[in-house]
Length: 342
Image (tube, rainbow, N blue to C red; front, side):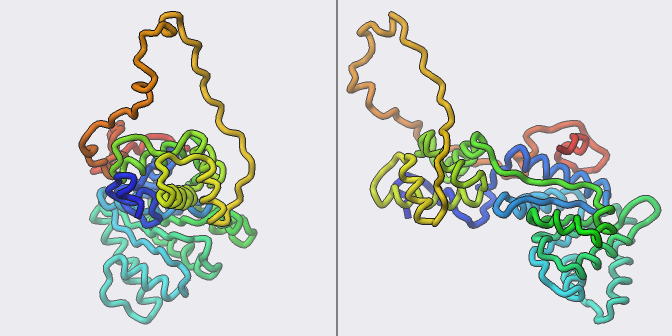
């Protein structure tokens, strides 16, 4: 609705996942590399946790695409609220099984043979489960048993469990100790800091086809960072609603009050916050005070933006490729597997 008003090609802060708008912060890149390293090195059980809205599903999609380029076959389950029988059936369907027997014993035997053949052919098999905090204890036990598929020196099925922060509490329960002790790597996503919020907003603004800086003032960015708590999903929601308000009032520069109005409409709290300190301008020199500058009216003219559309932005996979590092033993790898996981 407001795209034409702000001269944009796309909606910059849509909640719909669009590969062109995926912005991988440094922590997201580190998490993706860490998970990919562990899968390719056949470490077994991996856990990723974080608050809702921090980009876990986006991270898993990027991971799945990387793994597909690295000779890994994945079964990705996005809705784990299933019975153990349904879960095993969906796992096998995602691996390409066309005929699945009703007997659990026959299913497990078919799956084991499939994993052994894949391993002999040099392929890594991975199970990726999103929303793992919704897994029942019965299903977690079934997933634990899937980790028993192994040969002498490696696991045949790599298992990635991604869930909200309460999944950590679930794994810390005494009767979950047998699963917890099998986890090889645990990673987490954190809220974005103020500088990362500004970068996030500008990235999505540019990806929407803008040729200049975003219309959010520094103080407005401070407000978005404070009232979204650094959660990307809330950043999108606040910015999108603020742009709608600005469009309805034909305002092209968004300030704190517009951000506050958007948050109030969304029933989000707007507590007081301390704006980021601004760098002070140095006092003008004597030569700068001389009347040699253009007339004030000329100084107030808007700066003309460069014409033409920006070059297409690289995909998130290409952005991971920007920093090639030391080669690894895994053929086709496009990122550093030797980089330490933080």
